[in-house]
Image 1 (cartoon, rainbow, N blue to C red):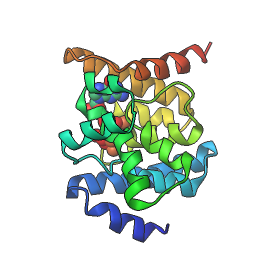
Image 2: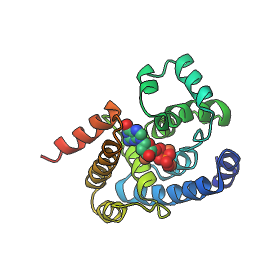
Image 3: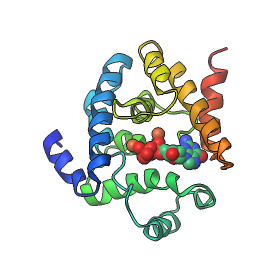
Image 4: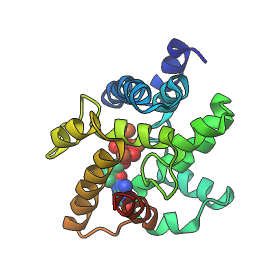
Length: 187
Ligand code: DGI
Ligand code: FE
Ligand code: FE
Ligand code: FE
C-alpha cells in the first residue's frame, strides 16, 4: 500500500497528537531500517499502523483478546498493552494487510518478546525515540541508536521497566524476556 493511502486510512482512527507521533515513528523506522538492515517498506507500513487500535474501546479489545485466543494473561496486566496485539488483528481484518512480518512488528511493538526480528526491534525502538517524544532519558537512547540497535533497546527497556516499577505497576513477562535476552547477548 502506498504511504499516502496508508496515512489517510490510519488518520481516521487517531487523535491529532497520535497522528503526529505516528508520522514520527514512520520517519524514524525507515531511518533505523536503513541503518540496521530491515525492509524499509515493511518498516514504513508497520510504523504507520502500529497504533491503529490505540483508541478502541477497552471492552471491545477485551472481547477480541478472549475470542481470538490471544494470551489471556494480557487481561491481567496494564490495558496499555492491549492495543498492540489487537491492532495486529484489526489491521489484518479491516485494512487487509496480510504480511506476517508487518503484523508481528505491530503485535509486539508495546510488550516486546524474546526472539524479536530486526524489523520488530526497529519499530519498537522508533516508537520510543521518534522526534516528538519528550521524556527523561530519551536523548540518551537516541544517541545509542546511532551506534547499536540492541544497546539502545536495553536502555529503553531499563527506562520503561523502572518507570512502571516506580508506579507500582506489574511488568508483562514478555517485556522482561526481551530485556533479558538482549542483556545476556551482550556477554
Ligand atoms: O502506544 P504508545 O504510547 O505510542 O507506546 P507503546 O505502545 O510502547 O505503549 C507504551 C505504554 O505501555 C507505556 O506507557 C508503558 C505501558 N506499559 C504498561 N505495561 C507495560 C508497558 N510497556 C511495556 N513494555 N511492558 C509492560 O508490561
Ligand atoms: Fe503503541
Ligand atoms: Fe513502545
Ligand atoms: Fe506509538
